[in-house]
Every structure is written in C-alpha cells, then in structure tokens.
Picture 1 (cartoon, rainbow, N blue to C red):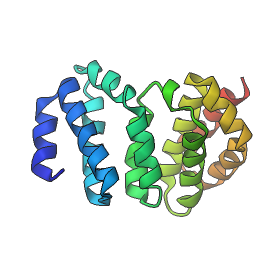
Picture 2: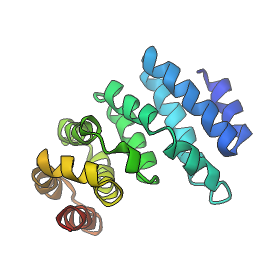
Picture 3: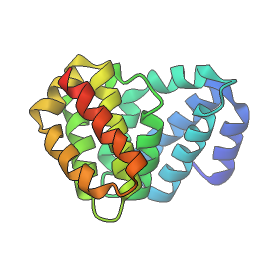
Picture 4: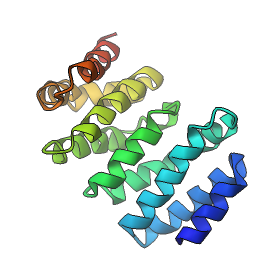
Amino acid sequence: MDDDAIEAAEALAGSTGAAALLDGLEAIIKEPDEEQAEAVLDALLRMSSDIKSPEVLTTLASRLTTLGGCLSTFMDAAVVVEVLFAVLNKLDLKGFGTRDNAENVLKAMDSHSDGEETLVEYGCLVIAKLAATSEEGKGHLIELDAGGMLDRAEGIITNERNKKYVTEARKVLST
C-alpha cells in the first residue's frame, strides 16, 4: 500500500476507509515493509481519533487478528509498535486476549525498554486495557508476569505524570 493508496483510504473516512487500511495492513504483513506499516497505522490512529467517526473503532475492533499479526510481524520495529500500541489503547480488546498477543505485548515492551519511553507508556495502557476487557487476556498477562514488566516500566518512565499508567495497569491486573 503506497502513500497515495493510504491517503485515498483515509479520505474515504469511516468504516470503509478503516477497512481499506486494514486490508492494506494485511498485505504489508505478508510482505513486511516497516515504513508502510507505520504509515497505515498512523492513518488508522488519526481516523480513530475522530470523534465524528465512532464506526472506525468498531471496524478496528472487528479486525484485532490483523493488529495482532502486525505486532507479531513488526515486533522489532519500535516505531511501528509504538503507533500500534496507541491504536490498541483506543479499542475494546476483548478479542485480543490470546496468549500470543499478551506475550507479544510484554516482549515488545521488554525489547524496546531502552530509549523507547513512550512505547513503554503505551504498553502499560495496553496492559490495562487488555486486562480490563478480556478475562482471558488478564489471565495470560498475570501468568506471563506482566507485574514484573510493570516494575521495570516504573523505572523506565521518567515523567512523573505518566507513571500513573503503571499504577493503573497494576490496579486492573489485581482486581
């Protein structure tokens, strides 16, 4: 999916545009291109931030398998993971609670913990959202020692205001 196709899909807006972008992301996952994955996720993030288009969130939530595939494929690409975490944070993650997805969230946070503070902050938000919306995901996070990752995240996050993301994630995991 090139830049023109991304712009065209984003111009469609709503669920049609989001579906076109997700179709493009699926193609990118099959033939990985970090730059294009980031561009598609950026467009999805912009679209999901438009309060006039709540159907975009519904479309994204219906394609969590694609987003999980993106995380698995682009695990080593911090810029892709950071934007993906920002997108995931906006969604109901009930269908994202597989062991693989929970494990990949924690692996991505761990592998990018040096110098990627914003990614770690978003990761904490994803942990909280996943634990709050998926009992299965919450169980996997606990089993995979998300608490240990949150302990490390607390030392990584330097902005005192954003340390609340760690506290929030711990709270959701413990209830």
